[in-house]
Length: 306
Image (cartoon, rainbow, N blue to C red; front, side, top):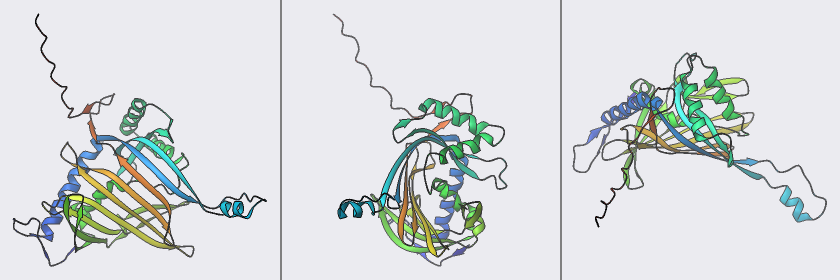
């Protein structure tokens, strides 16, 4: 890991922190995330906008109608799923993977939320990987294109081990909402820990690059931006994403949203917007049982004595 020789002020009224200190906090948050996210579950809403080629239908009457038919079309899909994280046991790396049970597609109910959560919990506890793989295949069968998964887990890239193959460089400051943030440019030096990409029957990994936005007051990771770019059949393919994290009520970071764009020669072909409800913790019982911090019901007034 290469460290730029720079001092970054973490708070106006505190001693400046080195880049090393910021990266240590980043690694700590990544490792706490890795330990806790497999115990959590939430509801995920995916809205996908896709640019489609012009319709093949060519009306015979009217120049305007012909021009309208020749324009590219946009299709929007929405999928609501129950979402959790686990591992594929037969994976050589035993790395964490996102799992989903689809609840509804474009407003059409596929199964109840309770049934989806139950199926998800059974699949995650299955003794082999068949149930897990069926969940991944089921999600891909709903007519989506350029589906991007596992971006919500991008924080795992920055564990202590992962940082050994990343170059970090200070890149100024910005704001996220009401928070001032320090910006770090990051770039992987080895594709082995990079993005996994499937093109047809071929699988490849690509080294990633992006920006890290860390809260200035304490170094807490707020956003991870990531992109990859490569040539393919005479075109430039670029995938980019911005992942926002929030501190959960359970004491560890969780993804709040992911915006992913798949681009060809600079044009956005597909945009995937994932949104996550607050994560809940569950036990490993037959039925999912949540550990929640519920708002206590309002106190009832004492009965009136007559």
